[in-house]
Length: 380
Figure 1 (cartoon, rainbow, N blue to C red):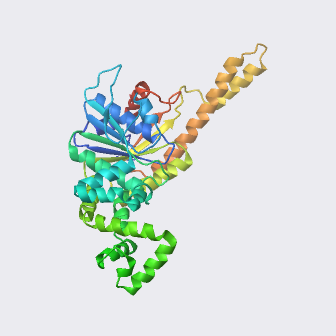
Figure 2 (spheres, helix red, strand yellow):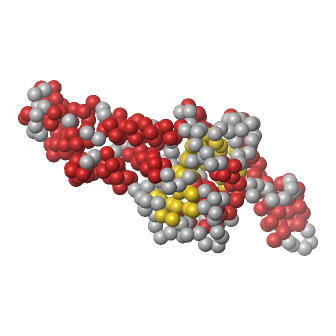
Figure 3 (tube, rainbow, N blue to C red):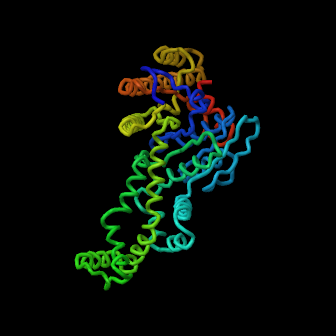
C-alpha cells in the first residue's frame, strides 16, 4: 500500500478492514505515542471483526496497563474486553528477547545440540547484548506469529529508539556478524581437530587467538568457539528465517505506518523513516500525526487577545472569561504552528497520506482511552 494524492487523508479503517492487510508495522521515534497507536489500532481492528494480536517491543508496562492486564509475556495473551462486544478477538504480547532467541535455537537445532547452545556462556551473553539482537528477535517473533495462522492481523510496535528502523537491517546485520571473519576464526580450533588452542595448525590463527585471549580471556574464547561449532549446524535455518521475514516485510499484505508528533524533531525523524522505507521498497501506508491540537472555535487569536484586553480594562473584572480568551489565543497559535509543520512535511512528501489524531485531555490508561484513540485515528 502507498500514500495517496497530495494532501490525502489516511483512512485507517479502510486499512484494518481490508482482509489483505495481514501485518501493520508502527514505527517512529521515541515518545510520539507509537505503542498507544499500535494498541488502539489493534483494539479497533478487533472491534470491527479481525482476529488481532499486537506485539510491543517497548519494555515499559504502559500497554499491559491500558489493556487491563497485570503483565504481558513472550506469548500472546487474550484481552478480555469489557464495556462493549468486539466482533473479533484481541491478543497482546511483549517481546522477551532472550526467550525468543532460545525458542529459535530449539526450533533449528536438535534437542542435544540446543541444550549445548543454551548452556553456553558465550550464547548467554550474545542472546541479550549482541548488536541488533533485539531488532532481529522482534522480526523473528513476527515471523513466528505469522507462521501460526492464528491471527489474520498482526500489529507490531517497533523498538523505542531513535533509529527505530534498525530492525529492517537486523536479519542481515546479525546474520553477517555471526558469519563474519572473526566469528569464523573462532570455529577454527574445533575444525582443526580439537578444542585446545595448542592443536590449531595455523600459525596465523595462533597469533589471532593469543591476541583475542588477551582481550577476552581464554575461557570466553573457548566458549565462543564451542558456541560457533554448535551454531554452525543450524545456521542455514537461521538465515532462511531471516530471508522469509524480510520477504514478509516487503509483501503486499504488510503496511507501515509512521507515527510522529507535530514537532520539528519528530517530523524530521518521520521524514527519515519515509525516505528509508522508500529506499527499502517497504509498503508505506501513511503518517499518523499524533497529539495534534485542533482549534475548537473559529475566533482568531488577535480577536481573542483584543477581547481579553478589553475585559481587563473594563469597569467590571471578568478573570475567568479573560483567561479563557487568552487560552484560546494560545491554542490557535499552537494549532497554526502544527499546521505549518505538517504542511512542510506534506510538501516534502506529497505521496504520503496523513491522518491527524487530536490529543486526549489525559494519558491513556485503559481500554476506554484506547478505544477513543482508535475513533480519532479513524476520524470518527
